Image 1 (cartoon, rainbow, N blue to C red):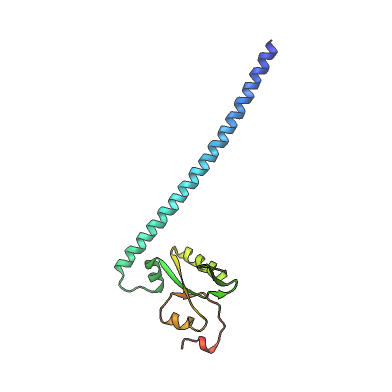
Image 2: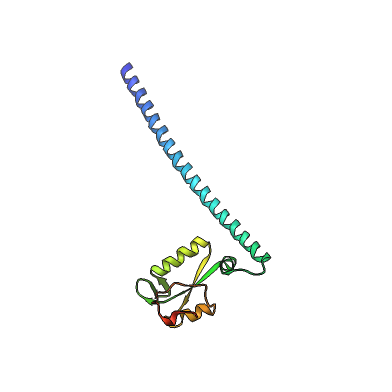
Length: 149
C-alpha cells in the first residue's frame, strides 16, 4: 500500500512539474507577444511623432526643397511605365514589377505613401522637367533626346 501511495505521489509531482513547465512556456510566449505588441505600438507612436514633426516644420519653413516637399506632402509621386514586363506592368489597375518594388521601398524608407504617375518613353523626361512627378522609375536608354539641356 505504501508503494502505491508513493507511486501516486510521484505521479502527481511529475504531473505538477509538467504543468509548471507548460505554464512557464505559455507565460514566456505571452511575454514575447506582449513585447512585440509594445514594440509595434512604440514604432507606430514614433512614426506619428515623426509625421507631426514634419508637419510642424512644413508650416514654419516658407521655401522647401524637393525632399522636404515630399515629406511634408506625405506622398512621393513617381513616374512609371505600365508596359515593360517584369519591370513595371499595370494589370487590373495594379502596378507590379521590379521598379514598383523599388518605388515602394523608397516610399517606406521616407515614411510616405507612393503615387504612381503613368509615363511613356517619349514623355517621361519632359514631364519630370515640368514637375508632374518627383522622380522617374522607368527603364530608358541614354540618348540625345533624354538630355534636359
